[in-house]
Image (cartoon, rainbow, N blue to C red):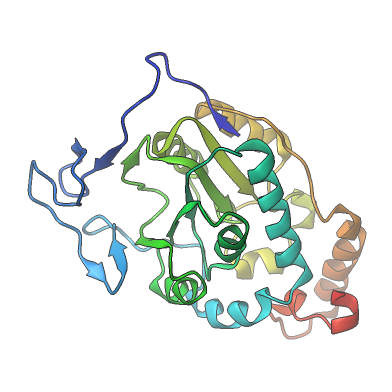
Length: 270
């Protein structure tokens, strides 16, 4: 989805102070108004507002196991190829990219390989995920922040959020935050789980708040100021198999493994 152009032409990128909320253009993060300066955790800048509650909706203990599974999983690899394709097709002139909720850096690594000249920024509220992402793409800029409070205005050509929105209650607010942070003429790339009838314990354990209808996502994007360029499904040929698998698991009542769908054999994965 692309941000609608502003009435006054190109806008100036701004930082938003996490202490007093004022905007400024200084090169560093020290607010000229109140003096608030974010701390650093190693190479990661911590852009979390004081007393901001930790985000619900995801279990950070999954990160080590997911990091082991992503690189060889057909699903993650296919999704990354589609994201790279969409970036090339719809934002070929992009110079800056922010991934919101980068997890362990799987997509970020694909973007780094495909677009060596792209300035990559990656954010994640959980330091556990950022550690893995920094190992994969050490040249990126890493930010520890919550998608509900993105302290930028008109900053990035493209913002990506890949299987993130479904974890957040107020997804409309997060889309508005992305619209604020993306530069006029830029846009967002999103992936979300589809089809409410697929809801299962898998979604509960993954910390999902919802599965999306296409019309619902389109409406929320439009309401927050975006113009949808393309919306489509992917991995659709596996939908019947996925539905049968979830129904079978629910009836079987066996001990549940939240990552079971990613632990498939080499032949099936191929």
